[in-house]
Image 1 (cartoon, rainbow over the protein chains, first blue to last red):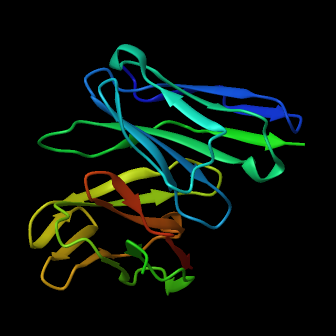
Image 2: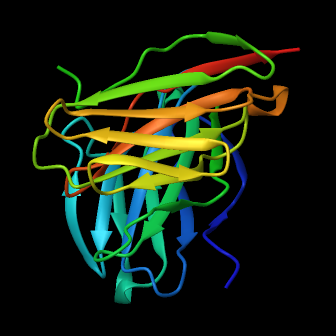
Image 3: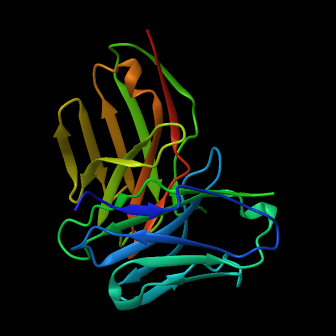
Length: 114
Length: 108
């Protein structure tokens, strides 16, 4: 296992289209996070899973965003009816829950909405 | 009040100097604290973790934690131009929350 993997690395979509991103965490990690990052800002928390359970979703997150983690393995983040303001880097990270809880990031998916 | 606060910088230091980066957090129940380095256009890379009060050293990096003051810091000794990046403080408050980051510029 070489780390957290995200796909695709880049996505250009037209406003109003739906997009889906995938994250494959480090295999033994049971916690998985999604963040959004725009230029000059820190990663903004979107949601996180512990195994297959989605434990929290940001109150700032629009209903257009949904995430799943079936069977507690990979996760998908879907954005429906994209808007130009959704343009950002979407980052996934994974960690253990107990003990050393360092989170490791994937390379991110850069979304551009035109 | 933001959950994790950092000065945005830029913090400019000469090569060979000590860079000092600071972070405060609001949740007194936080147990785990992390520093990440992020180069422009790349994803964050973990450089230090600290779980108990005091200092933790790893090479040129020292993390300091003071839970009573809700304060975390990162010292970088013998700063190099390759250390120029944004440094992100992260706090585990049952979920991992990041500050906005401090931009560090090390000039020759």
